[in-house]
Amino acid sequence: MMSTIAARSGPPAQAGGPALDARRRRRRARITAVVFALPALALLGALVGYPIIYSVVRSLFDADGSRFVGLGNYSELFRDPSTQTALRNTAMWVIVVPALLTGLGLILAVLTEKIRWATAFKLLIFMPMAVSFLAAGITFRLVYDHDPHRGVLNAATVGIHDAFSGSSGYPGARPRDTVVLKKGPGGAYDTVGTARPGQSVVLGLVGLPPASIPAKAVQAVDPAAAVKPDAVTGVVYLDFSPGGGGHPNRVDPRERGLPGVSVQLTQDGRTVGKATSGPDGSFSFQDVKPGTYHVRLPAKNFSAPYAGISWLGAALVTPAIMGAYLWIWTGFAMVLIGAGLSSLPRETLEAARMDGANEWNVFRRITVPLLAPVLSVVFVTMVINVMKIFDLVYIIAPGPVQQNANVLALQMWLVSFGGGNNQGLGSAIGVVLLLLVIPAMVLNIRRFLRSR
Image 1 (cartoon, rainbow, N blue to C red):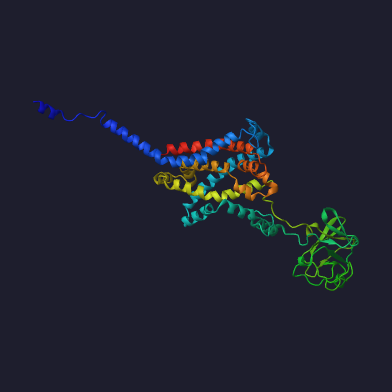
Image 2: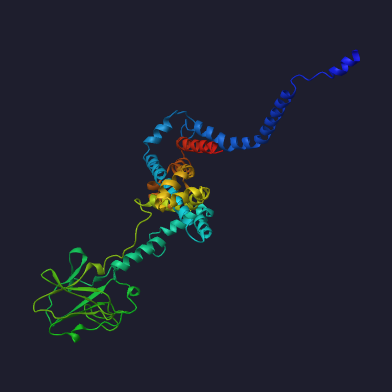
């Protein structure tokens, strides 16, 4: 009987049973996860956590770290004119660049769906992402160079300007003395004496290096030989004989004419005739009525040539650097938005088109609202990036205008290591920059967690 009871009852059950085993497995899994995460956490703490804590503590001390100043560095930060400029420029970057990048990326992503060779186009636009910021900065420093012979942008600007407005033929030229020509208002030169029909004038200029004389220029001629009773003739020439010799205000052998010079005939201050000198420097005003006249060489013949736009001047240096940043990051925005665009429900778009919506309405009322999560991610990511912009500003902006393009990250480096040697103030700027970045980071992380 007893054996039967013992056989039925079996071995005693363990306390807790399956629930205890499940808890033990979960505990072992957590321990395993912590063990595997410890190296990453240690590295994160060493590279991120410790520098943040040290910067916060260091910002409470003076320049050499020997005296506690509390929030003095933070009050100095907002009084310093350079830091105020950096704050304004950083705010401009945050307002302008992320919006432009998101808009350009959206437009390019939509357009690439409408063209052939979309893959090659995307590769071309995305390629600048493979270029380091150092190389991109050096490249754009050359692109924005003020010298049209080196700066690509100014070469194009000067070419377009000269195609429509022309350029000065002989900048810096001047008469040898004031016996024949005198300088008038605005930089023009007028003849001292008067001329009548049937007379000629000789207008000699100096101050021109021989290399600046056009190749088509030939030996200047004496205009008296071609004078006509009803015409005023003349010659504009380089009043300089190679090797020396010659006579001032007289055409000598080996003195070349100046072609392409604009010449005006004036009477009582009014322009009554216009001419342009030929390869031998000669010009002529025909059918001139009797009277006395002056011959004028307008100022546009001698003005300095158009040199283009000062892209890296104080007024345009920040927009110029923004342009370089857009060139680098537009491909990133386009690819990210393009990935979201490819996942849109095509049946919704086709249904809208079948209902009579044109492409603009489909884009504005359907595509953009459906892409809103992706657009916000791109926008917030770009906000975080532009707050940390440093290398492009440091490389592209020339020294004299670097303060005009200053941003917080660059100001932090300049104050701490670039000559300021005030690591207390530099740490305070770093903490302010961290506080400005944190809200955007939190927003991005929360959106990422909601999308899981």
